Length: 88
Image 1: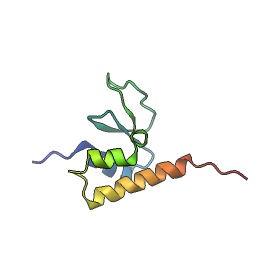
Image 2: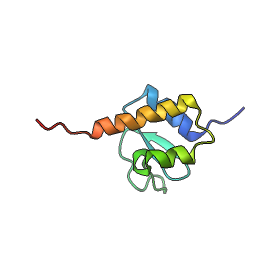
Image 3: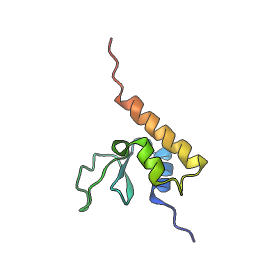
């Protein structure tokens, strides 16, 4: 049985549960509905977006297939859309 990479799992989980955000600590990826902050279970996790798209793609290029890359693109697009403000 092959163990799935944590980013791939987190992306699929997010696609089914978009209220979750994705957090990374440089070694492991988790999903959470709340801001886990900078110290979760003794590890420093920050939002995936704070690492930047290029960094994440380069860090996970060996495991990202077309499907998961498309999910990553959607995740970053949604994050960008969530941060937009409308000025009337």
